[in-house]
Amino acid sequence: MSRQKHCNIPIFIPELACPHQCVFCNQEKISNTFSVPTPGEIGGIIDSYLATISKGTEINIAFFGGSFTGIPQDKMIDYLKVAHAYVKTGKVQGIRISTKPDYITNPILDILEQYGVTAIELGAQSTNNKVLVKSGRGHKFDAIENAAKLIHNRNLELGLQMMLGLPYDTLELSLQTARDIVRLKADTTRIYPTVVVKGTVLEKMYKAGTYVVLSMEDAISWSKEVLKIFNEAGVKVLRVGLHPSEELELGKSLVAGPIHPSFKEMVLSELWNDLLKDKQIKKGKSIAKVAKNQLNYAIGYKGKNRKSLQTKGYDIKFVADKTLKDFEFHVCYN
Image (cartoon, rainbow, N blue to C red; front, side, top):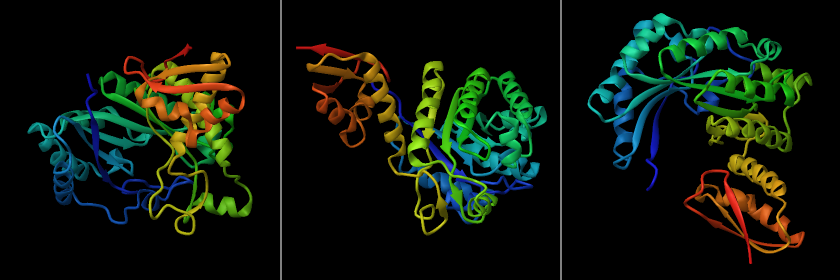
């Protein structure tokens, strides 16, 4: 039995509601969106996506890119009314929004529920107060805890995004953030290594030498360790790493940072490398059965894991097994 496909129709609203900028943030550059769609324009955006999505797909309208619940209330409702009309007709199944933790209150949640919002993603970024202050988030960990509790009380899906390598961050602090996200009972998360974008405070810090960007190697290693925590706890990871866009590349808006079109694959390849080491596979011929969706990751980015095993005397063949889930695998010997 095949899994139902899921699709988000993204509506980007960059910086529309933020009264201040976090040190890393230039949402127009990150989202590659240079104008804010009006409520009257988003119906056309939604229709254009719906025309390309296959039947049987679970579809959500997703307001990303800004702090949605910080928008003036009348304008927020105007956006939600358009999106909710598609929920009521059954063309889409729900509405996702992303916002800052300090922009969640019970009156705001009343409005979100009224207009069909089903999932709220909070930009937690870190749960360490020093990291939050150094990053200019405008709130501390207690705001994240409070918002998570309020969202849970409404039985809405909770997402908590995190960033690795922010100012003052360390691997141990990032691991603690991941553990806190699990403790706050997040349903989903996103893992974003920090990149330096033009026009941000972080760019000035980077050029002044007061901020050191994560290397690609460290970003992959940190992401892998964080991912292990989420996998063990059953928190669904929606994204690992920023996806490069035409605008967000070196020489344009990207100043520095670990960004790569295959970043997720490289992280999962390293995770599988650890799993295979822990298994203590016997040398000689063997077959490793893995979940279908993990086959490429088990083999490794550019075949890295298979090649590494072969050079150490392991004659191993990787095959997909539909009965296995995610990181389950079995090794059979000839």
